[in-house]
Image: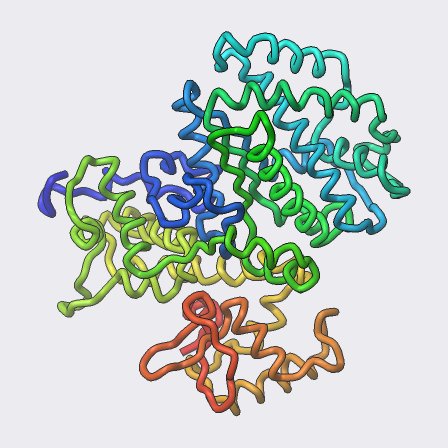
Amino acid sequence: MGSDNTHSLADIQDFGRGDAYKDDRLYDCFLDTPVYAKAMQGLILMVEGGKGSGKSAILKYIEQNCKKNRDQCFSLLLSDKDYKAGLGKANLTETDTDNITEMWTSNLWVELIKTINAEREQFPAHVKTHLDRIANLIKYNMEVNQDFIPRFVRFLKRITNIEIPYIGGGIELKPISNHFVEKLAAIKTHVKKVLRTKKVFLLIDDTDSFLNVLNQKYRVISGLIGAADGLREELLSSEDSLKDLVILVSIRSDILSEISVTYDRINNLRDFIKQLKWDQQELKNLIAKRIKEPRGLDCDADTAWNLVFEQQQNGKAVSTFDYVLERSFYRPRDMIQFCNLALEEAKSSNNKKITMQNIKDAEKIYSKQKYEDLSAEYLHKYGEKLSDTLLAPFRNSKANLSAFDLEDTIIRKIITGKAKPTWLRPETTKEDVIEIMYQIGILGVREGADCVFSFQKEIKDFEDKEFQIHKAFHRYLNIS
């Protein structure tokens, strides 16, 4: 596929997947970013960003790269599947962040031990004695072999009077024994000796999974942050300190914002937190790489995009990239999803390229998906049906809204509407609703000919502004 004349859409299966854990193109098409570079140097502890912004992609890529270079790297990646394993249902009373930090620290040590033992053949022979001690701990202590959540609870139960009405099929979980805690403390020296032989990556993903688990809300994530920071200091400052260590926690920006209100330790970690944001060119590079790499193309991003996407409609020049970008939230997941839907439309029409009409036809599905995704994304904070509360009232409205039109709709259809969600309290004002809509990306503020959203710029003053509902929702809501 060397030129426009020889190109065929049949050569393209898809543009990958928006979910890093399901994207078989991630490793070959991973796009380096400044955040990734800082993570690899161990300069940051947390990578923050919106859902679908590529946080998981960074962690998953690091893990995959370690697997391809096992003689040099060791990695432990904890994610959603690990947290949910062994969990039936739990309803725990609240406990303080320090207790949860202690629990997290112990659990991270156990996960390190388990992973080291699983990969013992990948470590050099001179640490065999230390590996044997680790293997013996696993062999003779059932606590190590439990799933993450039951062990999580058992550690927590050991240091609190926490109640556990039901968990893991109703099985009674006794506290972790003092005897095991002592053994765990003694084995740490052997773990450090083993880990000193390689570059070590401890990666913690999908932290938002805990928001609806164990009734602990943000304390679970606050405790995790404290544990990660403490473990980093311990492993870098001890006599057996690791020479090359990366501990990286992914966290959603909206969740970090909530945590920072009550968790003072965040302020001391600001230098170790990096936000993952994308601009127009980076997102074009992202899609272009997924066009070029599988086919061995050597061209710039514009050329790659134009090989696949038509730039004409009815004889007039159009920017198909700008059209897709304006309906995204400047996140890789949105771009990949939209481009995949447009590709399906083009293939079903037997087109040589993806046309603007293909994109507009795909938008019908994409717009509905974004409407539904919004409720799922903010379920932890606003409960169910957020889209029905904040977006549905604007069905069949104009694209551009004056302050009067926006406030009138908010008052008539949201604040004084019949079905009020629990987060909408009697004291909630129209200004509060505008702030929420802006922060979660529903609402943009017009600045001249452009419309600015929260993922592009932080705006605090909304007085006498003009607004626009994000274009991702226009097709589904029939906004014109």
